[in-house]
Amino acid sequence: MTPAQRRDKQVVKDSFTTAYEAAANELHSIEREKERNAHAKGFRPIVIWPDPVLSRVAEPIPPNLIEELNSSNWSQFRDLLNAMAFTMVSLNANGLAAPQIGVSLQIIALRFKKSGSEEFETIHVINPKITELNDAKQTTVEKCLSLPGIEVEKTRAAFARIEGIGSDGARIEVAGEGLIAVAIQHEMDHLNGITIADGCTSLKRSRLRSKLKKKKEAGLRYRLVEPDAQNAEVSK
Ligand SMILES: [Zn+2]
Image (cartoon, rainbow, N blue to C red; front, side, top):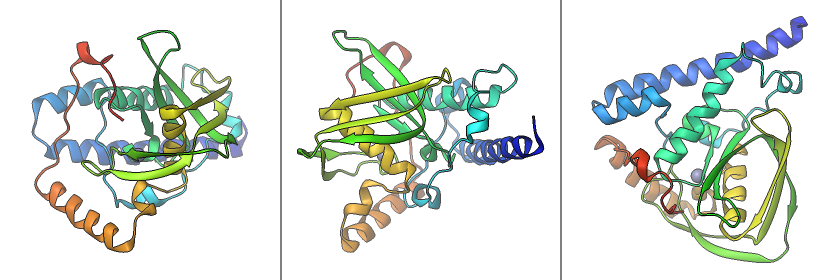
């Protein structure tokens, strides 16, 4: 490994460590057996808007590290991917971006029903790029784990396609319409520092801010899905 590669790797590792320490500290203050157990399995607390990490453009994983994704000596990266998947499934969500667990890196996780099946599959896309957006639009009511209890009507492309690197280090493409298109665009927004609050008027944003502040002060609780119900219908 060259000195430049070593430095890049250290930057990424430091980013994991800082975020994980913050997550562990935050969780420590939440005295709840279930959450501690979940954390041991990979659950990470969700960063709540307007935390600055949610308005930052996430860093790409340096290309010279992509080929190392599968190397056994980089288990921290594997841990991050697993934590994203476990957190998303535990919260019964169908998408999660790394900044939502405090890691400002370009990684998203998506969870869809396999075509022609009732089973769900989780896909990670690292350094995703949008390669196609349909001109046709759709309007849906969106929710976000980082803005619990908030619903915002959003108009987006009816079809979206992204490509990036999968968790196995190989190129991956994800495309779809309906909820899949919404989830893709919603998670891509997170990597660009955009949340569903950004489309709101400043009046609505200040109302959201005080509502979420009160929720945090009251001690935000996560409703975790039991493992046997993890394949239940997702609520967007
Ligand atoms: Zn979101």
